[in-house]
Length: 145
Image (cartoon, rainbow, N blue to C red):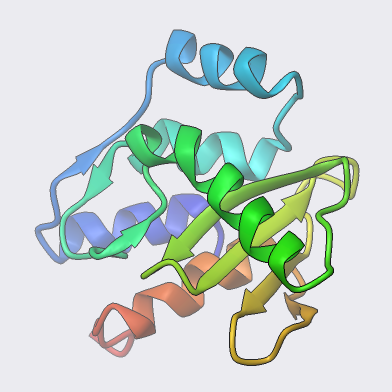
């Protein structure tokens, strides 16, 4: 599913979506000195400040994006690992799972994942939209409805 399809699905499920403004996205890009890939901007504009029970309990929305990267960098350094310079950490769960993409890997970049028990970084999804689609299932949504 693309971001538009995910958005439409969530609206049909009566989820209240809160998107980011253009200025909020630009502020975030300036803070991290980068330009987001279009697929991620679509996510932020559609639901970057909240999406009901979708990804509830994970750090993925605007107010948390400023703080998850330093926590992840600290965790990686504790295990002798480092984050690529071009990485943007956009998702965390309970402080032991993190996901990021590299900003120069295209319109809809692959997603890399770290799970503290594995002590390694692995490619988890071929694209951001695949990651967000799978998060529908992880959030308990039935895609058949």
